[in-house]
Length: 272
Ligand code: SF4
Image (cartoon, rainbow, N blue to C red; front, side, top):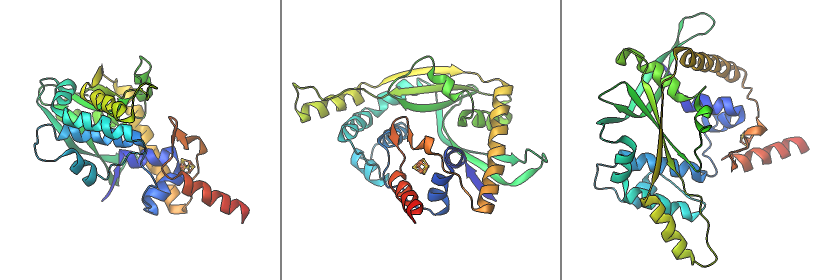
């Protein structure tokens, strides 16, 4: 049975060309944007909070985590060295289950039949004591509007859907934002002092949490959107035709990880 992850579908929805490069041609990204590396390090710090052995550099090496800007290396080191504190801030006293694999059948939106594929994902965290799931994010700025970005089309609605049967209700979602520092090198400080400041920011993690209970209508709207997207993906794969979405090249100010390859190919094609 074919397995489709939320991130795979999301990749396709954002830019078909990016999906083709990554999942069909299996080309490794040229770069990993720093924000992704910080996010992965936070995930690692939470999962490894109660394990003692792996050193920070082991985690970086084994996870092939890289940073273009070294300041994030020091910030992540601070996060990792103080990971137990972060774990407490994020999960409180809850006995959470981390990185639970979940799967859900996929229904053909036109025929209503189950198709031979399943959607899989991993929950950031799940409470053992109440119907609650966690979604961990890293963000430089969190405002009241931030949550609006996740109201539709996010993995949390899918995961809520998948967990309904087990919980006997749709779980609430606790969004946890680990704030990334927005600091720059001061004129008065050396590079070493600046990196030390980044390290300390990792140690003094600022965390904001918001709890949301999505309505059934909101959840089903997202589920329907994803099922339709899977149908679109099937058509694109069958015809080997993937659209290019130039609006995605600089999402949140970060260059797409296939940017150079993609634009070079476009220039060559145009001039051929
Ligand atoms: S550079 Fe832009 S168009 Fe090309 S794959 Fe990335 S997001 Fe898509």
